[in-house]
Image (cartoon, rainbow, N blue to C red):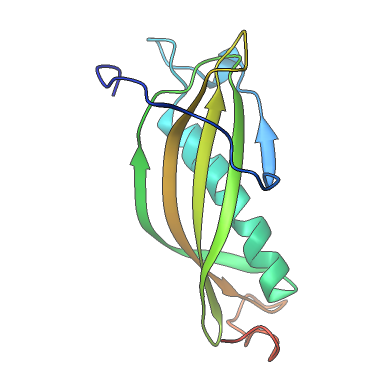
Length: 137
């Protein structure tokens, strides 16, 4: 991962679903942010859109794809963008793209991660429930 050449880009025109700046406790011994930390943040970002779609609680049922393109470092400003890909009877599949604005200048933007996740709407007992009819494709 660190041997890859960074491909600079710009942030998408839409607003991110969330932004966060990783701290030293989130870094491994080499100074890069733990992949598990990034996976957790991606799951949170994806679930925000899935909850909007489901109009209630959801649970993660699948991580369909997950790619790390570049490392994230302490002090990078990390932005998460979510696109709804598919809506089923009870499930929502989303794509999450993650960009880092490199610390300290924040003008240097690189795509660091992308993932596809599927969530299922659940009721208060944790059982799958149908999505609102106006949402289902």
